[in-house]
Amino acid sequence: MNYNAPQSNYQPPISVGDWIITLIVTSIPFIGFIMLIVWAVDKNTPESKANYAKAALIVYAIAVVLTFLFISLVGFSFFSSGHRASDFGFS
Image (cartoon, rainbow, N blue to C red):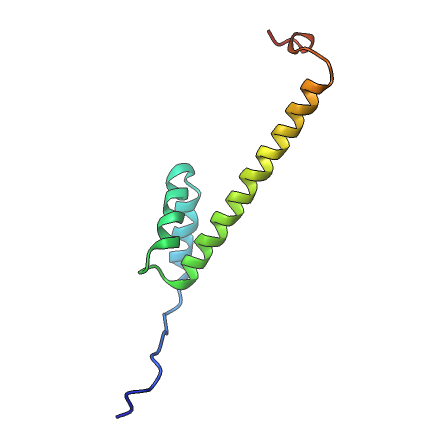
């Protein structure tokens, strides 16, 4: 027996049905985000699903940062223009 043989890390591929369920779960607003975190850190999650979850979380983080920067830029330009909120119909 060869005890120094490399261990096989073979994982069966995730089925199309499992991917459909994954996409449906991730489309649920708050629960989908929590499930992405669970799949990204759980050791029992298949590697391809864990990589998908990590990539989705990175994309979400980038979207949040860009949204914050855009809103900050628009707000800054609004207030630096010298106008008051009441000029635009806001109380």
